[in-house]
Image (cartoon, rainbow, N blue to C red; front, top):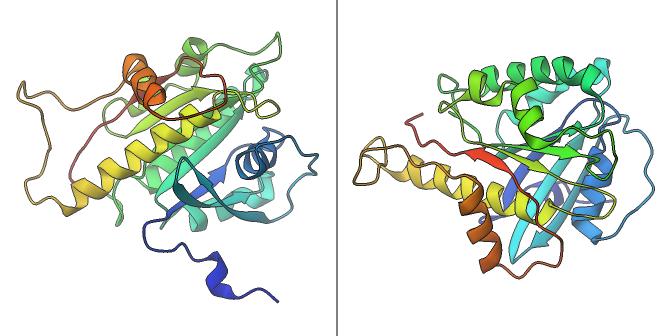
Length: 233
């Protein structure tokens, strides 16, 4: 019988909740991250929890089922987490509005006014290997990432293929960076952390490439969109 403490992240480890609509590929992503290989999965009824290390960083990730009846549970898993991983099926344009509404609900409950402040959000646009997959620009638009979230949240959109693992390393590197920023901010007593030009710190495609080049990764890196904003919770 496993010990309850096995599922409690150790000091220094990152605790993330992985959510998203049903059939978006969350569990495939989870086991690709853990084992670095494709594994057959079945629909999640409840949750899966796995621990793994990427580029020296320890993660504990809770993969929560995406069926309608399970979505009310998402808030319990995202409330006290370091980061939220939201997985979408890039080929399902007809479900993008549904995904957008669910993402907005989670963001509202974990926004600036919440007890824990803004929690970084990594949006993984899965199934990019399929011809019908929307590109990152279209996904950013239909999910309203810039319009709805803008500079109020730390967010990053990463196109991926969970089957091959393409894009996952870059996405997790950006999640690492966002969590680090949030932790540093919580320790700060000066409010906003700004560079000398007074602009809020934000990272786009070029920064993503620089971060990726500095880490030893084996998976192909794809383009991505992000906005990192540091604000006082």
